[in-house]
Length: 87
Image 1 (cartoon, rainbow, N blue to C red):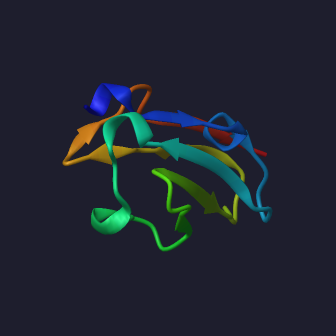
Image 2: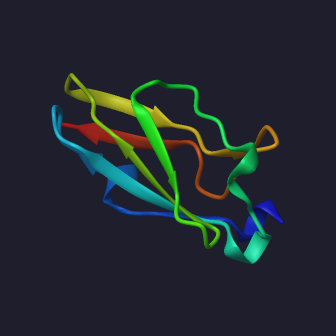
Image 3: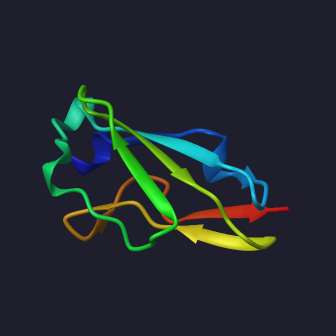
């Protein structure tokens, strides 16, 4: 099931400091529901779109390389961890 989860969007590749950056998690093929979602950073907001997709928004306060981990039940989804360059 975890192999069916897709993470997409510019925010998992590159972003800008002091700006909102976003990416999407598509869990429809894996029947992913939002009830068990949690985040490790207070700077990340997860918006449940109600259809098995989730919009994730973060606003970094400094330039540098960031690591975004997307896991389900402790297991990384395909492509995770994502190494993001923030300018």
